[in-house]
Amino acid sequence: MKIAVTGKGGVGKTTLSSTLSCIFSKEYKVFAIDADPDMNLASSLGIHDKITPISQMRDLIKERTGAEQGSSFGEVFKMNPKISDLPETLSLDYGPDGNLKILVMGTVDKGGDGCVCPASVLLKALLRHMILKKDEIVILDMEAGIEHLGRKTAESVDMMIVVVEPGLKSLETAQRIKKLAGDIGVQNIVAVVNKVSSIEEEEFVEEKLIELNIEMLGIIPRDPAVITADMQGEPLAQYPESSALKSIQEIGKKILNTKIDRD
Amino acid sequence: MKIAVTGKGGVGKTTLSSTLSCIFSKEYKVFAIDADPDMNLASSLGIHDKITPISQMRDLIKERTGAEQGSSFGEVFKMNPKISDLPETLSLDYGPDGNLKILVMGTVDKGGDGCVCPASVLLKALLRHMILKKDEIVILDMEAGIEHLGRKTAESVDMMIVVVEPGLKSLETAQRIKKLAGDIGVQNIVAVVNKVSSIEEEEFVEEKLIELNIEMLGIIPRDPAVITADMQGEPLAQYPESSALKSIQEIGKKILNTKIDRD
Image 1 (tube, rainbow over the protein chains, first blue to last red):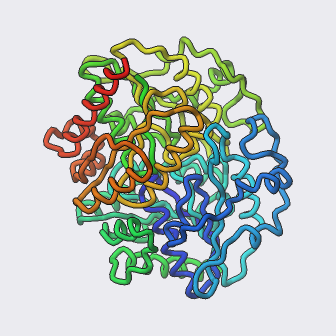
Image 2: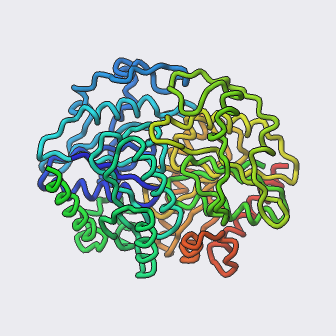
Image 3: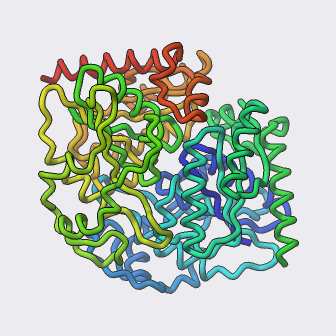
């Protein structure tokens, strides 16, 4: 199963992605992929070592896509780079059982170096190529906003989760994501509502999601433990009393049930 | 004076941009520019009408840059498009005195349409071209994260504000922004700390900013009025009792003092 986590910036995509990855890795082999150039999935998993991202492998990108990262816009990329041997070489094992592997798409190394289109092309091909076994799950932590939908980075996912929070801005983004994801053939779009601190906020978002015709997968309460975990650089999964963690565990169960329905 | 507001997704860039725009427009002519493809600056100013973004002006983009938005990556752009007549045609007047003009860079119209590089090129040229009078201020609400620094969209600004919040993730982004902005020649980088709810959080961020050698311009408390304003689709400037608004007013004064120092 391949899952992309999307939404407006700051709604909690990375927290949801990393926490689901921890939860799933107890029973599944998980590939957690940071597809945000402003990457912090590893940090959210408590890993503060540097991971070599795809985008820093200039020779590899050039060889596989025909374009150099950071070169002028005028490059023509090979659209189907050979990537069959990449997943193992690029990932970093993590977790007591080595069941959680982390891949990092890449970042902007130097101001003025250009966009991250070449790295996106490689990641898109990688995702399309990955044929998963029954016990394998891919979780993609997407970049904030909607540009990745122009690039079709996540076109081959089975489920796209849009994270929203109480407020019109993140719901406007959800509406755009639903429309653009439909354009590229992703149909299974569900919402997770994060940072809810009152019944009024919950009802506000629920009502809007019904208007947008987006199914709600679950609600995560506003929880100071999320801020504490971020300040400490620790995974939320290490805070067993966290109400947000408990909600994400429930959401994880629902996702796995969806999977059983699909198989 | 040209100011870019940057930072990790969700830290409050748009709220700060729109509120500063409202405050400054009482004494200055303000161009508020939404440079985020997942645009919501207008919405944050209480404007829910559709504004035609630069990116939707296909003929204009083709004519001025030589590239069609949404075309393959293989286009070569004219790097110095003629844009001298654009600001007035693209902007929307707003505010009782018409002192606040809103421009929108553009979005992704259709999934799979490609990246927003062509629109970025036009905006970058527009910014470089704009020679401001003493009573004019440009406020750029940048896209979340760091890709815009690869594209050098904001290379010609006088001040780059990085919005951070309590937590390592937004501070990691601030560190990247400072480095990348330096690469493209933007030296005047200051931080605004948002969503602070305790002395511990304030001290945590202050200490980190000293480590990063980023000057702190001001602190904005966590304020439920910000969420209420977003849910209502109203500008924060309409909530005179808001503690966040009061802090942003102080930050605005400091920015204008910086300006006087520079002139």
